[in-house]
Image (cartoon, rainbow, N blue to C red; front, side):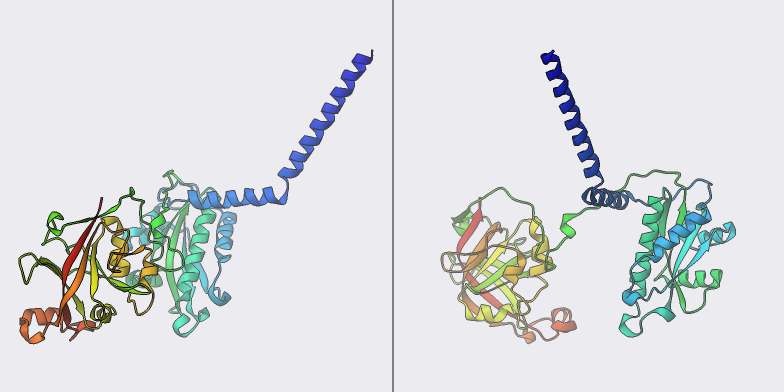
Length: 397
């Protein structure tokens, strides 16, 4: 009897514990944290799965749905809370066909049961330089409508109008828009008759941190070590060495700059055993005084994965404005003679300057002068030729 009673007590305790656990789970599932996570998932899922729909069923969009779409659009942010948006809602087939006939990329308009034209009332915008904020405001409206349509189980596509003025003027006449109203674009909406897979548009290379150039993403390379070789063993291609652009780096620790150059030569000069590298720097460049005041410099090649760093940063940004060594994201290394170079390169020519001369314009052909020294910001901005004896060649192996 006692044994039976003990089993009954244990079973009762187990039931109580299970009930408490179920109650805890139920309460926890209704907690604010869970609600937030659920809402976050729903919102992100709606954003990530939205895609443009251009084919629709004949089913119409009812007034309640239209109001929801417009309310979602008007929930968008706007500069100074000006809310310059206004809308033309089109369900007339003749009007939609007229749009399609006159705007080539607007074919979905005739197929969709509903078209919303998103416009800006320029009497409600800022004046002066801030006037065009209406473009951002109405673009935010359009995206809200697209997301709302997707969330409601509808399909939609954004049809561009502004800034193509012929399209703007056509819609102005067709819809009797006043002169102070500008159509930004149209949204064709309907029940989807197609289910295209959403595109994964994530691209890490388009993400920059703190500054434009500071996060140029470069794939990791297998670890290689630098090896000094004789210049005759390097088998340098005299004609293609500079064709992709190389980094010219000069200075001492604490005062180093690098720039991309595309002109230069390698060969022999002042003795058949003296191997030289010749580079050219315009007189206005920040690098020039560093070249004048230092006895050594490096010319460095990189693999193609560093093209963005080489051409979009080192070749465009001036060292007068910022520390390019830090900004490039490259790793500075000092060679045997305290000459600067980068760890990420694939080949380095270490050079000792033996000659520097300004190239006189009167020694050039008219064709060269016209093309390179009479146009734009480089008019009259001649080059200085620097000849460096190649004292070492470094190859990463």
